Amino acid sequence: MENFKNVILQGDCIEVLKNIPDNTYDIIFADPPYNLQLKNELYRPNQTKVDGVFDEWDKFDSMKDYDDFSEKWLAECRRVLKENGTIWVIGSYHNIFRVGAIMQNLGFWFLNDIIWVKTNPMPNFKGTRFNNAHETLIWASKNKGSSYTFHYKSLKAFNDDLQMRSDWHIPICSGNERIKVNGQKAHSTQKPAELLYRVILSSSNPNDLILDPFNGSGTTAAVAKRLGRNYTGIEKESFYIEVTNERLQKIIPLEKSLLEYKIEKAPPRVPFGSLLEKGFIKIGENLYSKNKDFKAQVLADGSLIYEELVASIHKVGAFILNKESCNGWTYWFVERDNQLISIDSLRKEYITKFIQNEQTIVKKENNKESVAEMNEMLKKIVEDARKTKTLTT
Ligand SMILES: C[S@@+](CC[C@H](N)C(=O)[O-])C[C@H]1O[C@@H](n2cnc3c(N)ncnc32)[C@H](O)[C@@H]1O
Image (cartoon, rainbow, N blue to C red; front, side):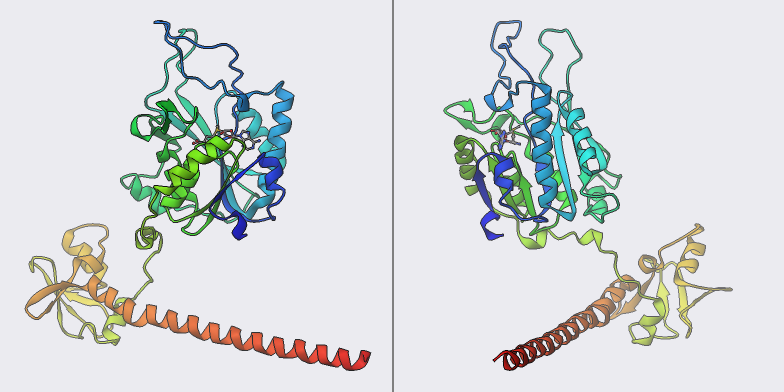
């Protein structure tokens, strides 16, 4: 496994992948040749040449050749993908429908198609068709019903608390981001890092291993390194490997603490009564609203009494606010050293002291148990081996 970690391997991905064991990768991002079939050079109305994709690696003799090639690399990718892993494949109208059909035939299960809306697309210079302003990413799991990684809450927070949608508005790679060698674009189809940022952030975890079988200028590897993931890139052309390695040298991984998906972890449920039992809040003391405009008294059973009403911290809060519901944890405060502190901060203290500590102890105990079990097993194996030896000699 270590041979494939954080390297760009040179060769035809179909051949290179044959050396990689089954179920190796957590996610795969593939930006294969699109088979654009651009034969003639393209000029703008002012006769300047368009910097299109005329590379040899994008040329196939026929649609059949392209399909055979796609089936081979996709089958290898499916084999090296972990059972709960996912694959992303990007393409345009030239190839994505063919590639999509092959993926479904191979058993991949489609989760989404993402439309990458290019905010600064290249115009249709001849004016003969619509301006082609998007590309499509297929996101698929290895099997139907597998439990793949998706950081739903994180992506929602990323998108101003709105569900992240399947249309992503991102500019094409240009300006300083575009890698140049001797003033020329180093690669004709360098993808924007922003696109890979969303792909990797949404569907993988720190330390995961990510495969890009069509590495190009190394956008996947660069973003993976920045986000604390491991990568394997595969690329036919040595020039692009040099460009990638130089690019990777400049990338500094983000600190581990910044990469945690804290928002995904729901806080453990703590009943209000537990705070009474452990003495964080005293029976008979008052809880106050933020400005001390309202107060209620804590009863022995964990309910509050406010005027005539006896109910939970949430229901009394909702009654005072004249609302359907209220989060009592954030509504109520207690007085400590002449200052108001939120009961939610007491709940956090409780979690740290009684729940997280307990979990660590349980983990340690489990470890102890499994080490003891292993020792027992080893003893048995050695004993059995000894017995066999005595019998055969
Ligand atoms: C569309 S580009 C990928 C661009 C890349 N996503 C980036 O951001 O720079 C496809 C790349 O795959 C490489 N390639 C094409 N066929 C290949 C194959 N069979 N095995 C490995 N690499 C291949 C090409 O040389 C090209 O660099």
